[in-house]
Length: 369
Image (cartoon, rainbow, N blue to C red; front, side, top):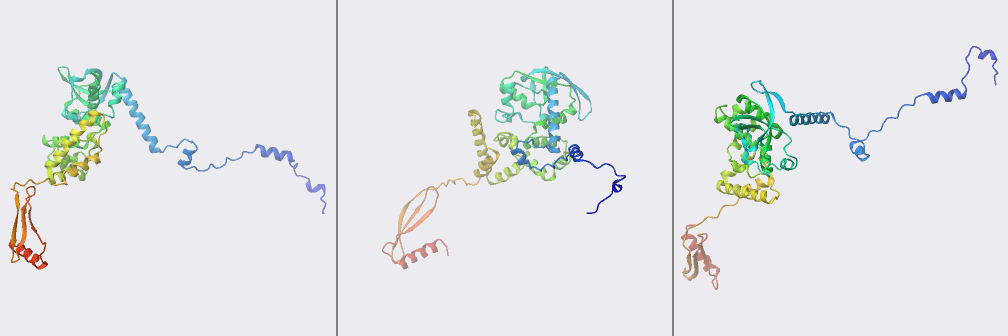
């Protein structure tokens, strides 16, 4: 072993002791361990809160903003809104109006004849229990009557619930703004495709548009939907009245009805009228009604079977003839229900040649080769 002199350590600082090393380790920060990734299913199983996506956060924020707006509408006695066409700012004042003093003009777009306890089942129970929570928009007509721009479903629910007065925001809305204002406000509860088609057709009838193509371009409706809306416009309200609510009717329903009408229109109408009757019975009894798929199946099946043809013929009593050299007995008869003529050969005790000869004789007489 080589010994070192003290001179070798001269100039060096004091060496750390074991206690110095332990103290240094205690003061050093230990890096946090990397957290292990957990799937959404694992987080749910362990009770951890699910992390919302940016889309969900944005959706929730929009819903909260809309809820705040609705709450403000129900609490404020006055408010101002800029009109969509003229740009005029209109002040609305909240007041209670007798339900019978409010009419729903055609510009509202919603068919009031289709509003009943079944089609309003999404809002009627809460209005019966808690009353009307959100006011509707109306404009004064005169003589104490008002026109509804928004909220006709709430108005109908108030009538069904026996509520005498309707909470409304009343404003002098210019005539040029009423249709667009109503369209914007109805987005909270969109019109059915059938109701939209009726409104579109009316615009063409009054000359607002030359044809369906021009209307669809103006309303940014895809070209593929032009024929569908046109087909919906051509079917009567009867078909909209057989659904739980008109919004259950698909956009292609008009085209389906057009195909079925070409097969047998009278049977199709009969089936639709029967469905409307059964729906009324279900409404009265409180039983659930059929869904859209079942309704379409019933309508399709109504035109598949051909009706019985009534034949006005006289029945012919069976008569027996003796045909051929062997005098083979042949019974001849005619059906009263179908008009069918039948020949029966009694082959008892006859040879195959005799039966074949009679058969050929009948075929020759009927000019069948």
